[in-house]
Length: 399
Image (cartoon, rainbow, N blue to C red; front, side):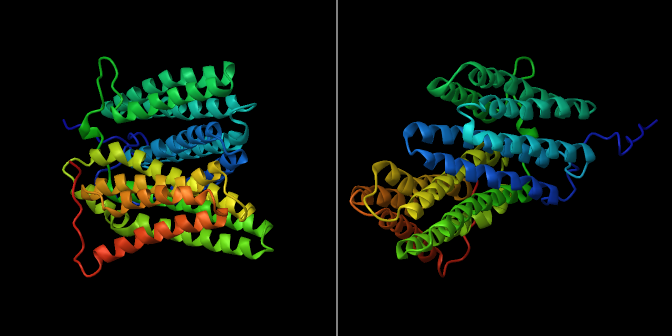
């Protein structure tokens, strides 16, 4: 006799392959936490512009980003309309908000809150999913593999929070993140089970590309928030108005360069790829670079709006020019994902930023910021000239 179909309430919460995969309102609500997180990270960076502070900001950004990226993959694999998945998203949202509150003191008194919540998010997700998908062996084994890797990385996360300070905590947390990021890239291999098969790592073009685009817009929202907030407190002089105008124009250019062709065609590129899992392997890293570039650029806005005149300290210049350079580097990698080639304007823009750096040491911060804006304008202009009058370029899978 044929086996009866499972009752809807007892069916594993895995997505139906034929069901639409548009982003849900709960996912958009979930993203709101990260507006505050990115703003606090950019503020942490400018609190004392040093290499150590920059490394701390990078660690916190990588941790916050990974809670978002893995949750996004969960909503791509599992049905976000199911009650249990909704509860999981809300729980991660609460955890991400708790991590966000610890950002200002993560490397001092609130390290355990930051690290403990990060570990609880990732281990708790596995402990929640494994029973929920126990009737779906492939999903259960995938959740188990991921849980094992996060259990390993939990050790340096918690040891650093409990017993290490300063540079030791920084290095241990970098090591923990290396485990988390490497595990994803290697498809979470574990003894006996091996790695997650490629057949279980395919992604949905419509949903995943839309999620990454939305997070990039959130990062731009951080830049807008910083520019508007700082200018509202220091808006009495012409220099502040000029710096505010440059900040707005720079944000607009970052958006334009991101969406030009690659951002528009990403869903089609994923859908056309022979192995969509290749995009899954690279997209978290390329978008992390671009988001880091935007967050650093926002920190530069903070510095310039507070002190638009006078000489530019080398550390400030590294932030003001380094943010756009990091964004262009990530944007070049992103372009390679979609077209399997890199436009010369991307490395050309990075080279131009390096070229103007020595002169920036003798200029006021507002002029250094304007120089970065002009370089981005040149990149956007080159993009426009290259595509004007030509038929739309077809996306190609990466080699």
